[in-house]
Image (tube, rainbow, N blue to C red; front, side, top):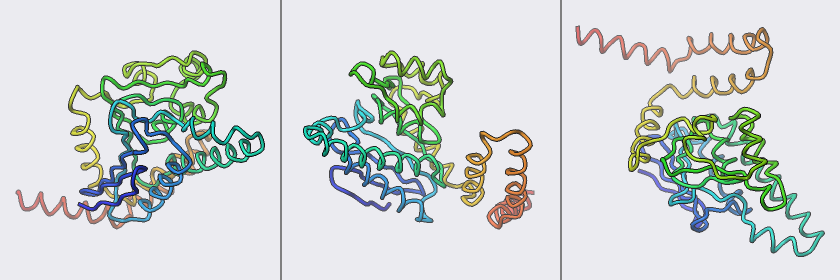
Length: 264
């Protein structure tokens, strides 16, 4: 087990190839500028760490992540010029971090045991997978505060259909875990008390898969997802060929053949 810590912001525990990032910064796990920069730096470190195969992101407690730190924004917004400069820095940093997460070369899983709201839901939607407990809820509440969750909707729109997206953005109403799963935001809802164990078991198994093929396969999915059919195959085909020639795959196939021979 290996641990790296940034006090009060992000804690990273690496066990069996799985890096679990626990958000800090108080019970709301708000995405302050410091939290965003720390999370981004941690993701960059994990992308370069060959011992890490899977990343799990969690916000411990009844709030997964409450979105941006509104108190921090209010402090800077007192002066109009300073407010605009800070907001530009904040949202550009957030977009860069979310893009890194969405295009991460290793599988990412959000483990949601509470409220994921605004940019907190953006964080969930930017992960490859999301496992949740029955008490988890999702929300894009900007409209209820006189605004609109514009940047969170970028990530969420890549998970849900247009009418689900409009319901989230135009009502600002918290939605249940069942609603979120049906809409495409959650992969599975784990029974009470099993979320951590089920997520860890899934992630640990995934960490045993060939990392090279997963990395190139994920990149290919990103590249061809919105292309016309013939262009999508043109992107995917050479990557598929390389998968069959990948040393990691050849080694795995050889190991399986050895086990079968031994059992016979």
